[in-house]
Length: 376
Image (cartoon, rainbow, N blue to C red):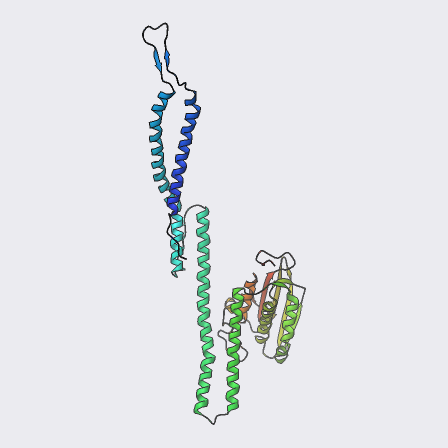
């Protein structure tokens, strides 16, 4: 935004300090004039003492005092003005020095240097609070930019794989006209379906990260039942038993996104289960002012050091995503993004007898809407 040049804040503060000092001095001298000189008579007084011979003693009147007082008042005002300008310029510079450091850090951040910090020393005051808040914002921005860059690199890699596979299959089919067309079409369909699933997952993840959704009161227990019912055919095909229980869990959020969250958790628990059968337990309830959704499955033991990485995009228990039922590696990443968009948290822990336990905690919807809930 183009702005016309104007006086600096330091100059404004300097003029303010000097003006205040001059006004204060003028008021002080005015008090002397009003409450002192006004009581001096304006007539010539000669004190003639009968006991002393000779001329009488001269006593100055008001006019004499005014003639002596006025020049000194003028010099005092000039001194106050010069002293106010010099002192105000020095004090304003000292006061605005922290702001200069914050401005320099802002310019560096605008140029792309998010690693720079203000780190303003000294005791707590308004400037230190501003600097600390700015450092916190820079740290979060740096972490988000790093995560987005890593996510973009992973997404590009994952999208390139099905596209390269499709291109290779088309090249093979063109060089071998006698190849079974049905087989090529089936494989192309599978690769294309995976690319579509990945694209839709990326769009959903972006939507959750932006918080671009409306809010309503949603019962997590009903959402969990709907997700489990939707995935019953997959569970039956893999001989996995899904158990849904718990109490009503009213929350504030988007029904579509929370349903996607529950669906991703149940789908992940079904797919990554014991070969030939297992169980998935889905529980909901209220814990204090929050509502909790817990999904736990049976399966192979998971290294506790690997658990925190499972919510990263394109990661799973065995490392990179592969296999017919591996999905696109964004299931738990979407769960985390949806939970954070609803001001909630996601906690992962290895199951006591193998598998994984995922606990989602969201703000409850029984009380009045919180400050972040937009008004109607």
